[in-house]
Length: 260
Image 1 (cartoon, rainbow, N blue to C red):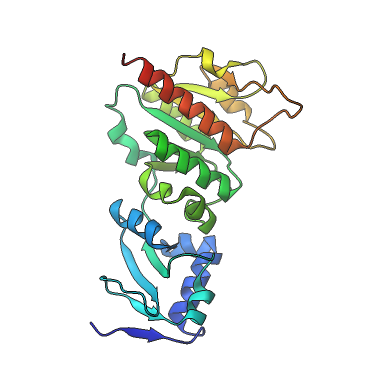
Image 2 (image 1 turned 180 degrees about the vertical axis):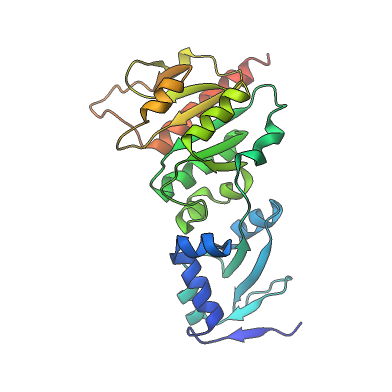
């Protein structure tokens, strides 16, 4: 296949990629997003995403159909540096709660729930930890950022493609968890127990709120238990991605220990 070389930053396809990087409204409208880097694109393909367009930096050998761009054009397209010379336009997947239905036969799923997550980097970091910990699903409730924000993709290192994820309202999520017998543990400082004192070997959802305001009352009232990470220093909180990693790996520890 003869290569198409794009050398102008004014090319309509290049402008489209840049717009998808910058505008969440366009990503939602067109159902498309952008992935940078060979590793991330490989994860994307392995997890069943459909590549609509592939761009490669001039001189890079790739065995897939692609368009070649000059360094100047690539620099214009790239959201970040050091992306290994590859950029793809990818079709979004559906992220409704119904897509998590294969989890329901699971005897003890571990689910992470995030309410109104604001910072894309935190969402991406939590997805990365969730993939590493083998979390069964992540549910984003009332989000203030979208799953395909470039910073989510970058921080997740491909975890956003691998972890079964749903987006919904908090009310819908609570109903879903109750319906499937998943116990709700809310991470909060008030009226709570140390996280390691609660059994996480059963079907469990760990719910995290925003760093600024924490969880809303609907989650506090819906919870089966409130848990906290002890704060032994002068500060009264951890970054939400760090807190989520601590709690999900406590669940991993308990589940692995229970096997012996």
